[in-house]
Amino acid sequence: MWHKGSFLHHPSWRGCGAGASVTGMAMAMPEMEQVEAVFTAMRQGRLVLRREAVCSVTQPRRVLYEECLARVRGMALSPAQFIPLLERFSMVCAFDRYVMRQAVALLRGEPAARLGVNLSALSMLPGVMWEALFRQLAEQPEVAGRLVVEITESARMDVALGGRFVRQLRQLGCGVAVDDFGVGYGVETAVSIQSPDIIKIDASLLAGARCSGAGQARLAGMVRLAADLAPQVVVEGVEGEADLELVRAAGAQWVQGWLFSPVRPV
Image (cartoon, rainbow, N blue to C red; front, side, top):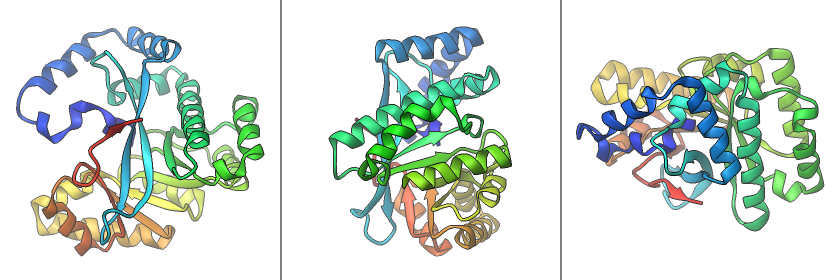
């Protein structure tokens, strides 16, 4: 999910007070100023991508792919704050397209890499907005085949438009993932897409499993549901060995989080 790349979500910041004060600084900025700051960062090359690996539960060095997480360099502004604003002001498609272009450029330069990018359901608009990028991917199938597009849960997907967009991605050879399964529109999106390649269980389910047997049962049930819909199931938010044991018990094959992959710069 897009917000995981923010340093505000690193476990080392919890309880120290610094994360809350920085968040407050960002939240004090008027909404349109936050949006303008993001697009200014894009123009100035200060919107950077960081990578977080999706690793095998049983063989941590085996990596399914690396998710690209956006962060604004030099500003206390996290995607958890600005993505909802971009969606509300109908500007998220331009942002998502920018991030995907950066990821595609990285894939061209790194033949062994497999990268994932987040995509709001509101950005799934077949047509001229994506035409140039899709043409590039069609001309370079070896690049398209190493790109995973993660559809986020924050907005409801238009079944007709979203279905057509997913079909285009698959025709190009891209992988399709559903992010944040179990919260927001994640489950609805996964069912609408019909057989995504990857489903990612939201970190909140793992957090609940840490607290009680009921939470563990809920996580295991969500993993089973996801496995009925997709061949690859990832649990997000793994921070320690105890989390890894919970994921193993729940039956997922893949994990993502600070335990195996501190977010690294591109």
